[in-house]
Image (cartoon, rainbow, N blue to C red; front, top):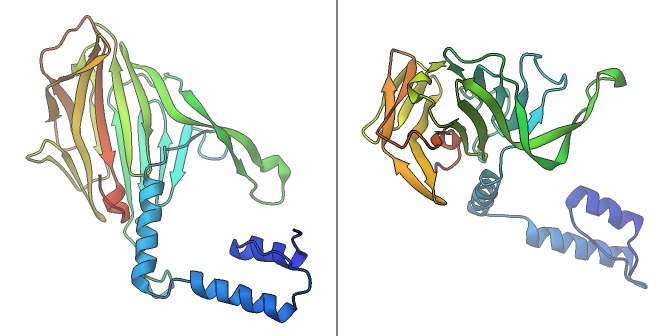
Length: 287
């Protein structure tokens, strides 16, 4: 079976594969192609919405991809992650998170549409070690490329990407590790034996208000809506089993939070794992 040049164009433009059948007329092939398009096009808006939901579901489970900064963004940033409606910029002393909600499938993005509200969060590590150098972990096979403008000297190509980014010793004996998926960002504080959870303090800039709800979640009220940070999961690994330790957020001021951790074995490592959930803010489904 051979593929004609006309069919190749159809593959590139419409994602269909069509074969040239010896002896068939152009009109017959065109009718079959038209019939195939007609059968595959979603005529019911509910079908289109269902397709969007399935795509969002699958996309949301993909891991975040962090790019090393080699000149494609502000030089103060060490790693960046971009997705549909958000961008993360990581430095040793803060994470800057920019959100822009996605338009629903039935809304046209034209000049008459009211712009979606955006938000910028700055999660700053109060009193942290600003000299900590980021380390990319779990390198991914894909590369990022920025071919902007006509000057090849300004292009950035073959940028390595990673699934996790670690900042060692942001506090004495405390490493910080970022990872997640396209619905939520996790950032683990990994405390070595003897490190003090009381040293960790986060200044959160951007929200209009911050509060802890009845479930222990951190509620960040922004101009565009609410962003939640789930109650921290705190645990130790002992004999290959995870042992959860009781703990909660503590408000230390209008924009600063810390962690209150119950008694634990300080001779073993401890992990404090907050999870920032942004999917509902962006128009997806919350986890």
